[in-house]
Image (tube, rainbow, N blue to C red; front, side, top):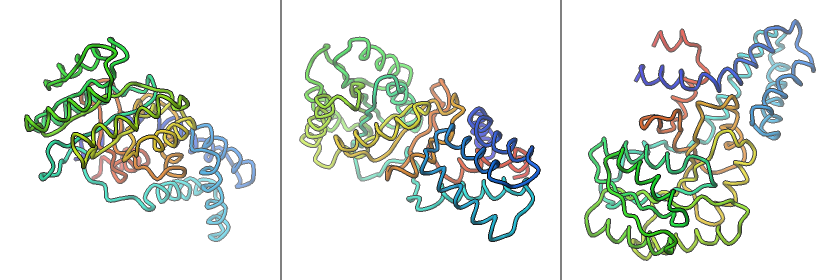
Amino acid sequence: MLSKLKDLRQKLSKSKAGFIDKIAEAVNIRKIIDEELFDEIEEILIKNDTGTEMAETILDALREEIRTDKITDPEVVQIYLVDIMQNILFKDIPDENDFFELPEDIKPFVIVFVGVNGTGKTTTIGKVANRFAQAGKKVLIVAGDTFRAAAIEQVAIWADRAGVQILRSEPNRDPAAVIYDGVVSARARQYDVVLIDTAGRQHTKERLMKELGKIDRSIKKACPEAPHETILVVDSTTGQNAISQALHFNEAIKLTGIALTKFDGTAKGGIIFNIKQNLQIPVRLLGIGEGIDDIENFHTVRFVKAFFAPAEEIEAE
């Protein structure tokens, strides 16, 4: 567990340096607690994609606690600020089961992945397939992005890397029909998990978003209780646009969770707080690298320790 925590902390270092460490720097160079300090903290929060509303929530709480406790030392401000931010992440969190632990009474467990172009959806599917395969699960990937031959080839490469089976079709076939066939086949052949790739689509394109509803209905026709998970794959660097994406996709097909990709490559870790403020959709997966193993089950306690705790504190555990 400790080595995993150290590894996660290392992979979050860029995000932490651009966010938490900048706040520490701003606080440490100030000699007094004044509105300029609050403004500087607010600017850092907003630049790091916490969102304006969340930044205001954090600053209001910080002002109140400093006033109530009569704090005058600027260096103490950071302690209060981190405590407030941690409490926000811990507030009203759902029971966080391991994404990769499957219910024994459901077979196949059907997971749909959706998202806009370029978010890392296919890569995420490959990483998830690998994790399930390593756990000894029988996995089928359904190549539901039939609009681009390159997309089918890409997901096939990931299936091969993960050592799992793939159901693919000729390009331009109705994706709902391909996905229906995939789920029916998985039920007949006793697969443990079905991972469904869908075409990347802009959330502003109404026709393409409506197609997700058709895909959802085709899955339910093949397996009435499915899909069991519908994951929106979001690029961590997209900022406020990620919130708009989630709201639109959730209207088209009911989302159960979010996979945040490229979190190791962004200096804007505030997207976690933005999602917390604006969505009732939990973050389930965290992409933290380009390797096939670089995906984490998102767990609030582990994330908070890796993101906020000093290195010496982790070493001492």
